[in-house]
Image (cartoon, rainbow, N blue to C red; front, side, top):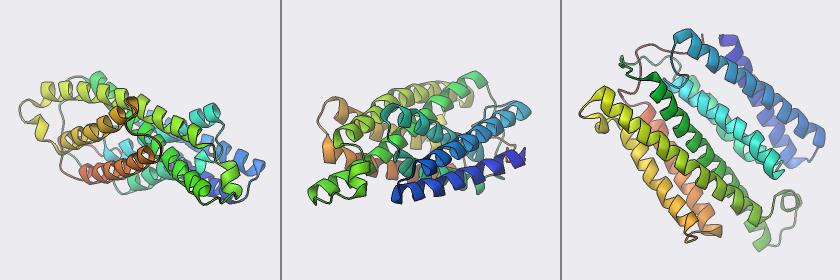
Length: 275
């Protein structure tokens, strides 16, 4: 099924280029082509992950390679959901590159060999990883809308009423999307972490909390909790909220990449690459 994965990456790359073209030259046909090709690429990626899970009788997020691609798939799906909800055509220009970034990063981890992990409950593992990554994807959505917010805010302050100003949504709508990403993502990630901690204590026994990915997840949760509290309490809003989201996501992505290449009992002996 390697060809299915490779076709997906090519399709997503073509869609990415078309979204960039659309950003600088408004064209309905270009937007439709970009969204259609991305939909095809996302579908192929979804099928690839499903086939990998069935072939190896495991969850489709058990290795860094599969995890990165699963996260990319969620980001693409969120693009379609929120573009439909907010009618924000430029969202693809800011969100799709992040998804494709994870597609590319996965290429460097496809042959990672890892130590055997005793699975006490694959179902709990699936719930844990699914909720956690959906929370991360929503956080990345908040990042994309925050970048758009800062660009539009700069246009307003400088009174630069160019084509970007007319095509970007209002600050209110962008802040609403950012808040929705944080507010919806935090409970999902919290649920995923709690299930993961329960599962880890049951399978690994004492010392599970020293695993690099456990430490990373806990640190990420603290950052996410701070943003969530700031949003629901209305203590952080507007420009400050957008800047906070951008910096927090950059920090989290950096920690995510570093922890993924550290030795971890999270991972399995087999290498589930694009075969």
